[in-house]
Image: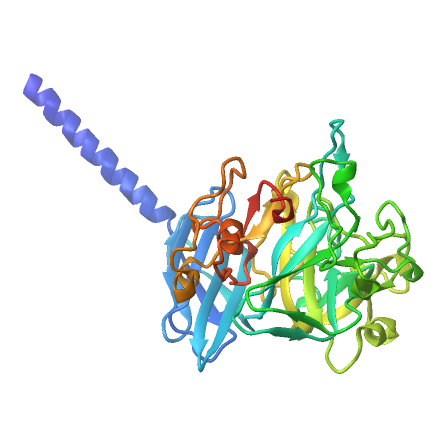
Length: 437
């Protein structure tokens, strides 16, 4: 009897397993993703993620640009982010397809159109916008900055260099610029809307190889005199946003700069809409740098032909933005508030930034670009100069490469930072701005 019982249990187990396997097989759905946008579409890796369970899959395209998947029903997002080298140039390809709905028993298709971009010599190395704690426990947010970096061994000479942010100001704010097809309305027109105006450097800017340029956004003074965890911007090498005549004259945001900063380092501005301070989120901005081509920044900003209205609200000055052609853009990064990721939407198109990086604000944290480990280690002059762990107490969330860029640079190393046009892969949240080290 015992043997019979055991045999019956084994049969039942086999049946249940077989039935379960059959049920799973029935639930799998075929998905074909067509990759377009470049002549050679072979060998691109397509990353597929379930929007609910976050389960991830990957497949490579064939010579026709087709990647196939067999997954369970659900809503998926697909991404391609790849770098290719041709004739001495580095090309970065990015593309996304979102909200792909798969239903049991139905074959589904989707298309990813790749956007191609040559990698820029000058990149955003660091963004400090979230503010920090005051000594009394309150918060301080008038000490923002952006640090640019020459990511090459050649001197960078930049004319007509500008900085702007994208509407809406916060990543989790209602975005009225998505069409019924789920795409940004301006994506097909290949421009990015600069909200509330823009800033530009008044003269040609030169950045030495593997060197940085500090641009103060708010509070170009020694803020540490009143807030110990803030930043001291009283430095003759720094640049700052300061142009009261533009209408950006709120002294909380723009106190008179430190007298050690030369007036030739004051940026100029064009203000659109209302308000006396440039809109730059303390939680989740989308920021980009660009160079105007064939026209000065001032002339570009003054032309009514370049004005576009957020959400289609034509003629309402509150919603006026400037149309910046994608081809002018050197670099950009999308930021989401760490507590609002589920409520956030992309503002930068995938050719500018295919991902996003999260920020915990009011803690003095900074968004810091990851080191390109292989490229940095390949520089012969870096032998014995790279530091492979953050200094004690600096942070929590270290660079995935394991290299402490700031400590290495102080040690004489040349750092090459990662630049895939995907902030999710390119940045991490560091405990404090490097200017405080």
